[in-house]
Length: 126
Image (tube, rainbow, N blue to C red):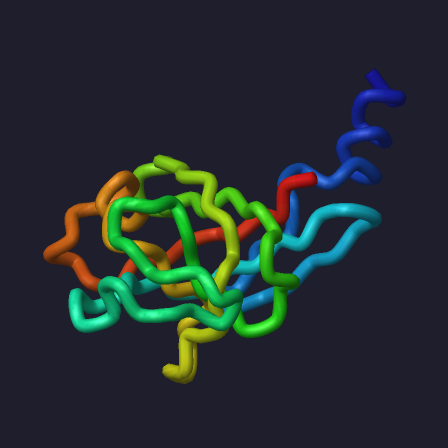
């Protein structure tokens, strides 16, 4: 009984809470960020991205300000735990507080398009 009491005092009962603002945690191979995601407007359909590829709303692509072009990431909607895997092929978003712009179909896979902005985690995949 004494051992269990001491273990309860020493062992943390829950992980430390994270603030809802954008955060970055790095380990050997994974980047994990929290922040807001949006999707590309129809205006960009067929236009070139930073990688030289043309943007098409039906492809699983995204824009990120600093990840290498071609990086695959898993984006998880933290409101419903639905995820989508996308390839970074563009730079952006250019709005403060947003960490990723998804293609329209990728955003629609994890949220209702009418929401427009959602809180997500972005995890780099090997």
